[in-house]
Amino acid sequence: MDVQLSNGATIGYLGGTGPAGSALAVRLASVGFPAVIGSRTTERGEQVAAELVARWPSHALPITGGDNRLAARCDVIVLATPWDSAATTVNEVADDIAGKVVITMANALVRVGKEFQPLIPPRGSIAAHVQAAIPRSYVVAAFQHLPANELGNLDHGVDSDVLICSDDPRATAVTMTLVERIAGCRPLNAGLLSNALAIKALTAVLLQLNVRYKTRVAPRFTGIPER
Image 1 (cartoon, rainbow, N blue to C red):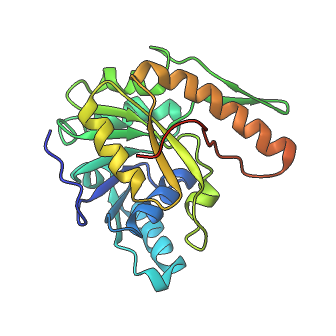
Image 2: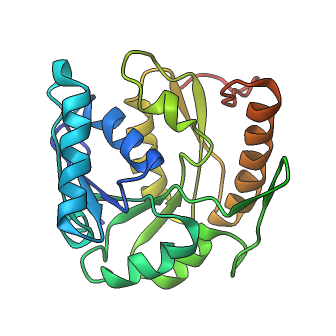
């Protein structure tokens, strides 16, 4: 794996037309990482990309769109599909993303009444399930717990720690570099991919707090020295 995350490194968003993927694309594009919004169809990817650029005209965002295969040709990949289609999506582009960092944002959560509850997918977490599906790629779990509304609003900063899990130290380092470029965010190495299950459960708690207190909760951890 050889990824140089200087300005100009492109990020492809598989299934990037939803709230989470498009929000991260906007934020990272605003700090120098061009985005390719992928979808099952080229038309949908291009439509959402045009809408994002038009929403923030003063930023001249370097965002284009296409299908998932086009997005898979980028330097770094973000998997932003719903959790139940994550493994299927990466399988379809496995050759294109071999040797690349694949950051999954997916959470396997279900709402039961007024409560959010985490589901336990095969292998314990979506991230581990995705890694098993694409063993030639380097999977990272990150960004699952960030509120999409705040992440995609360039009029405001994002105030949150970002927990990062991966079995590959280089993939963790690549993701930490991305997080560091987002003003107000601090990357934290949360260990191996197996810990993604705990982050998913934490995300369910954060969503519950959002509903109860009608706010947007993001985590900050005390006692960790700044790098």
